[in-house]
Each structure stands twice: as C-alpha cells, then as structure tokens.
Image (cartoon, rainbow, N blue to C red; front, side, top):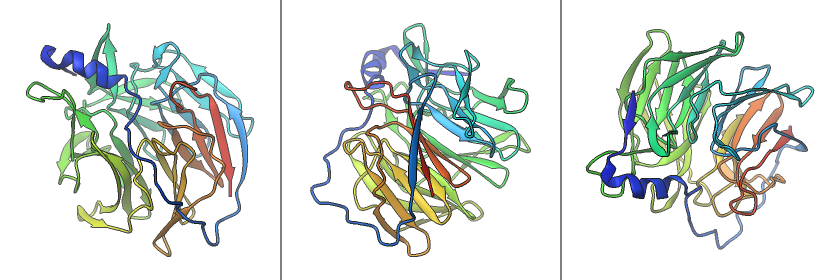
Length: 328
C-alpha cells in the first residue's frame, strides 16, 4: 500500500525530501573527557557502494547494509559484509529502493525493512510496504504493510516484537507537507499483526537501542530544533522514563550498545561527535573515538566490535563508502 502525497504539497515535499539533514547550532562548550573509557582500537575498509540514508543489521555472523541513496539514486541493493575478511557480496535490486528507514533482525533469520521514502518516477512517497529479507536463503518476501508509514523512523526488536518509533509522515491538510509524529507502532512477529502503543513523550525523529529489558531513545529532531532528551521505554508496561540528558543536542546520528555502554556516533553539525552513556553510572561523556566526519550513518555491534558504516558529509563528500571498526 502506497501512501501518496497530495498534489498541493508535492513541490514543497520534494524540496524537503532532498535536504540531507537537520540544521542546528553546534555546542559552544566542550563536552568533557570520559573517565575509565574502554580502550578501543580502530580499523577501516570500504563498501562496494558508497551510500547514506541506509540501514544496517547483523545476525551474529554477517553484516547487512540495506538501501539508502547512492550515486545512482535511491537504492534497493543489499551489501553483505563478512567481518572476518572485510569483503562484501552485493545483491543488486533485491528491495524496493528506499532511504531513511529501519532494518531490524528478529534474532533468527529474518531482517524486516520498515518505512522510509521511495520514488515513483520522480514522485516521492512514504513507503508502507514491509519487506523481509531471509539471511539464509537471501530471498525477499513481504509482511503486512505498516499503514502508519513514516520516514526517519527508528525501530528495534524485543521479545518477538518490533517497535517502530516516531519519524515524519505526510498527507493532505499538512501545511508544510511533512509532520513529525510521536507514534509507536508494534509488529508481533508471531501473530504477524500490527498494533498501536501509547505515543512517545515527543513528536520527533530519534534513534533507539535495546539494553536488557528496555528500549532507549536519545536525541532527535522535530523539523525546528534538535533535542538532548534521553528516554527509557519499558515494553512490558509501556512506561516512559526520562533519564540524564545528552551533553549536547544531537540529531542525524547512529547508536548502538556494546557491553554496558551506549554509543552515539555523529551529529548534524558536529560530524565527528562520539558520545558514550554508562548504564551503570547513568552518566554521559565524550567517547573520544576518532570518527571520520559523517552524518546519516548507521552502526551495529558484532562481538567486541562496533561498525560505523557509510553516511554523508554534505557537498564535500555526499556518498561515503568508509566503514570504521572500533574494537573494545
């Protein structure tokens, strides 16, 4: 099912669509130095296709890079990275081309591709089709559509369910064509049904990670300003709790968890920003990792390594093929 934009707002929507991020004022003071940081080594290699606005997932064995925007436009390609050899296999045109979406592994052999933006000719539309990539057979099937289609959403897997948070939607009656939402949609991978949960505290595009029995959402953007908010969502009770704020307002970032640390990579204006949250002390600090400048990147944790993959640095480096590996 395709959720089309009204003709009235299409021109403005196309303008907004091709803006690569969310503007904000850089921090005026240093964030500070971490105490007791884990020692991290780093190495680099390159993707077969440079891209941004993509999504990544791993199944404990391989890393999968989905879609995004490449030099050829919106991509439906899947790049499969072998973390041992750093070599990749490129599966061309496997998916509906889309960008700014989520890819979620179900802990078994399926990765769910949810939301984002696609093109029909030159006409952009919000993508409601949910594709399922099987990591064993490399076949793509479809799950029930996500009728609350969103761009710039964030999604995670927890206890047989996929939780999709926020992002932007559009439709007739929206003066500016795009509207940030506080929606929380839940897909049950066993019953294959979508339900709606209580809204987030804010309507914005944010990033989410899972740690133990809770989901954590940090930073974000609502079309006007960046946020430094940090929330804990408990799926079992659908309860929200506000935690210690990030040391700086942050958006266009990527996040992942390793051990008892939550890492955030990049920021719209501070492309080399790296932040770290300690779940034990409940404090944020500067991670001081040598991140190559980028925004709209993606990250994933596999074993003792964090992979930061692709992105954009704006006009100076529109499509990035760089993959950085931080070993802890």
